[in-house]
Image (tube, rainbow, N blue to C red; front, side):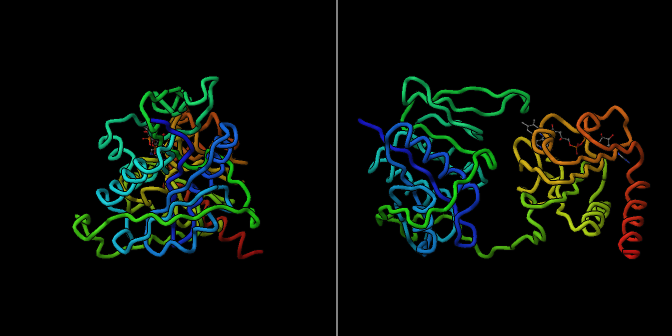
Length: 331
Ligand SMILES: Cc1cc2nc3c(=O)[nH]c(=O)nc-3n(C[C@H](O)[C@H](O)[C@H](O)COP(=O)(O)OP(=O)(O)OC[C@H]3O[C@@H](n4cnc5c(N)ncnc54)[C@H](O)[C@@H]3O)c2cc1C
């Protein structure tokens, strides 16, 4: 069997290409050019027409459009069935899937279905002298090292983390092919039904914010989280936190900073009650100015902070909020 071409599994948000999908198209385009192969993009959903042309403008040669009312929302079995059929039909060499909640679910399931290998949460895919022996680079040892993993089965499947590849610019003159593919999905493939979607209220997008106020376990309890919010509000910034904070759902599951979360570079990053684990630092150490508030003078966050306040956050943060409010009032 000859496996060729790169396949990107696209994800849409509000009927627009997600930022991660655009980043993956950019990486996929580079791989396809270097290998002298084609870049395919798979769009699974319902009423996909808004994103078909954009997918080409961001780099795809061919868009495989699987449009079906039963595919409006992600469900494991239906999406796996579609991807399985697509692999049989197109025999891609490597498939890049977004390392989102749904993408990780799909990646694991398709690999189990076909008994093939997967590398999860890749931060890079590097060509070697043997053209199809990709180095799949992912964090290991809690993010303190990067490992090079090779997949010996085909197609090679990787899930790709956010913010690792520079998104290419949209080329409105770019031409490509759109093919409609019959998913053969019927109601019997849908084993779970999404009865409603509750949108989170993201006031300022964290990745685009100039100012981020992030909180950690030093806040102790959700009832204290208002301190982080109030400081962010008075500064006009976005709210984020360490992974345990999102694990406990004080912030949305995809809103934490770090090696397995968002990589951010705001002008100002304020870390409140965050110790500065190696995993957290990898997501924010390139911020313009880092301010840390922590009662432990030896906390690792102080090694990367430009300004450090050693003290009890329950005293320091309210004072800071008051002072900033005063400064605002006095112009
Ligand atoms: C595979 C893997 C991947 C991971 N990925 C990530 C990731 O991407 N991002 C991430 O953030 N973490 C990640 N983690 C978790 C990481 O290892 C740490 O456990 C986590 O970052 C610690 O969060 P924290 O700083 O909020 O809590 P802690 O480490 O418990 O720190 C709390 C801090 O608050 C301070 N404090 C306590 N009370 C006060 C007070 N009253 N006033 C001032 N300071 C106070 C303490 O001195 C302490 O420094 C990952 C872990 C693993 C194993």
